[in-house]
Amino acid sequence: MHPRADEPTAPLFPAFRLIAQKPTGVKNRAVGSAPARQADALAALTVAEAEERIELDWSQAVRHQNFYKAVFRPAVLRANRQPTLVGLPPALKFHSLRHTYASLCVAAGIPPLEIARFMGHAKVTTTLTVYAHLFEDDHADAMNALAAMGTPTTGGNVIRLKS
Image (tube, rainbow, N blue to C red; front, side, top):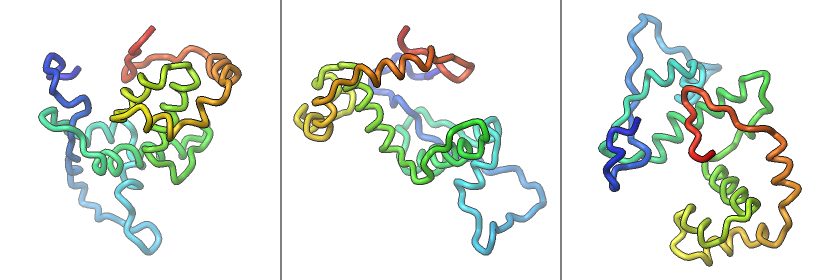
């Protein structure tokens, strides 16, 4: 629940800070000869443990660098450790998801002006320039393949935005 949902200027995604782990008496160990990266240490936590380490601050917007290091990168590493999932590219960047989103919008037939607004582009020409190659193709087969994957499920941490 967003505590400031009624405020139009409230940040959509809150800033956060990592809460220090409780002391265990065990010193941090190095992985190999170099100290473990923060992302590796956070990826080793369960999702519930990682969630307990984050304190949200709804008075400020999320900082990309903090989100990338403390949430996104560990999530990619954690996902790649799951034996049932197809691995994500190790060098996956958050910005790639933005391109995926725009590509799916084009394939779904959403008008370029609307996509430009979704993407935060000041001019529709930016959207048309970056994604011009996508507007030239017929995406019916790709969209049918995505639809065939089934209806997404919802869980305790997933809220369906549209039916």
